[in-house]
Amino acid sequence: MKTSYLPSTLAQVRREVEALPAEGRSALMLVCVQGLSYQEAARQLDIPLQAVRKHLLGARLALLRKLDQPAARRLDRIAHAEVHAPTS
Image (cartoon, rainbow, N blue to C red):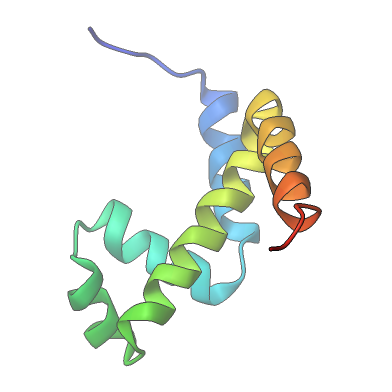
């Protein structure tokens, strides 16, 4: 099944990616656009593997919140529940 996107949607995605912090944007472009592994991206960026994972997660969540409002509301509820969960 082929999906087509409106030019305005692609322009919005481009704007949101450009608005990401540099670390997240770099990791996202290397892994998701250029197809590098996390390890390869870590070497290219000269940062630890865990930092690549952290930057990717932050970038993906930021994009999700900006581009998918229903998903953003679910993420916020989950984050709120985790922050306010009782500790044992």
